[in-house]
Length: 78
Image (cartoon, rainbow, N blue to C red; front, top):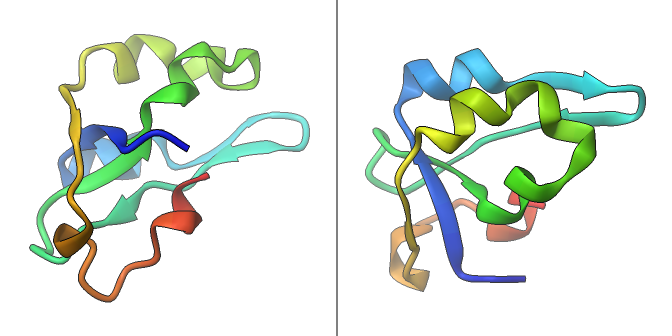
């Protein structure tokens, strides 16, 4: 998995969280700062999440460093 993630605010995370297609859902993961939420950038290319592409395409993409995860498990972002 890439270390590049879409950066979301808490409000954006709430807006995109949940089912996107049968058997598919988005589940943004919080970073240790308690303010930033992320999703792997690959969700932009996944047809199962096409319904959320307009909102996600507006999000900044960046590398998330290991220390930014804190207690969160980055594997939850898959």
